[in-house]
Length: 99
Image (tube, rainbow, N blue to C red):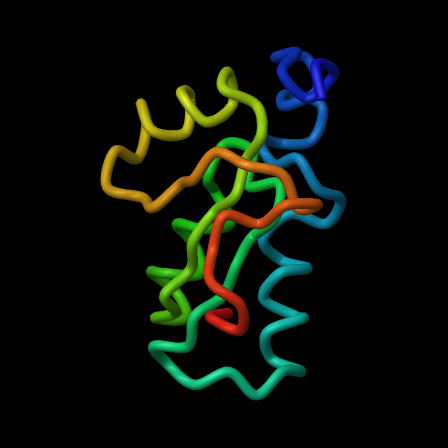
């Protein structure tokens, strides 16, 4: 987890913490059948870029789950309106079947 907190990693990946950035995210969503308003969980939300993008571009009710307090704080500093939750995918802090 700490390696993703290193600003050099963010810089090397053009500000995104997953290969392909938002272009790959958009490609994936053109293949899916998600209706506007669908609830989507971004596990490992990092800096919140994907959550913001899914909410703005695809009108999805995206929520980010991020275990790193450092990354979550940076995301909320930039996007204070985003729903970003502390937690791990091994123990989701959400009711079953809500995403």
